[in-house]
Length: 452
Image (cartoon, rainbow, N blue to C red; front, side, top):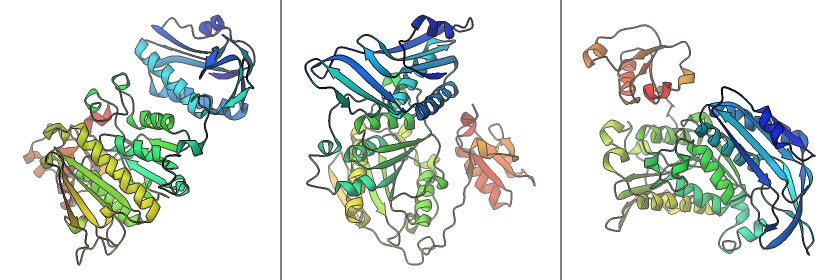
């Protein structure tokens, strides 16, 4: 599948290796040695490869492509040693029943290889000394160091503090995109992104990390790749999944960039129990709110112990949203995160900020803990009412889409069950009602749509 070659590549042989009568398309990418780079004339290139690790990682990337895309086969060869002008430095070929899957897979592989393979490139110039090109594994054709990157902010921040920080960002949508861009460009050393969704065309007007040609791709993966292009000096991880409490470990700070109350409460409760600072934001039409939750400084359940019903609150699909609103609130989350990491406090840990961006009227409310709040007294327990498909196990799956309210009221069982509706909203409400009656019931997260 993946190999390294010290000899020029035979395109015809590689093409033949992928030959398959069942395939309706083959897509090939070839990276060539060109005669210029950044104004200098290039005479040749030299590649050094850490072969053992490159073979392992390259094979893993191709395995991921086969799992993610509907392919018949995929091959990749990377050159090592000294290459002349016009020679192929990297060759990627994918076959599929339809061209779209092959296009996507080829792009995925070349992007991942550029980021993940231990390959170093030296450019040989006409009239200049050869130079090793810094380029996070031959991707960014630039000649700079980390100090240059942060030159304009070094007088304002302690870059070492930001570089050593570890942040978890839940949600790579309207709030997550601006927050993540600002955190990455500021030099937060370790960023983990959690998002289960794929990019849709209706996201793009406010989620500016994405483009129409990326529709259908996983947000977390695309975001990771875009941020690594933006800042090659930091580490970024992507988790394609819904938020789960076990994801929160060894982080200095968590950002909640989600858009539903159930998830917000789950993130909040997890951070409260694990005593990890949380910066949370929300948007409604032209309005937004922002607060930092710190241990022993009051919590979300001081104001409402039971999460509001998302079906009653609505979301951006119901009331609409503008990219300007989410961009401002997401950027403010990042700003408060940077301030907290540098100083150990920020303004939104003292006050909850409420903004009306249409009238440009801000308001702030002093944060305080409610006397007698059990959550603040460390008596909070995480109670999960949703399960992923892979967590259903031996529990019985009950589809309630065709069941009436009367059917559900009269329903009885002594089995452990998982309820399934269209999108998971009704099943979650019914699961809570069933548990109140003593039935061990959960809701299937994402509903029937998550089963496909």
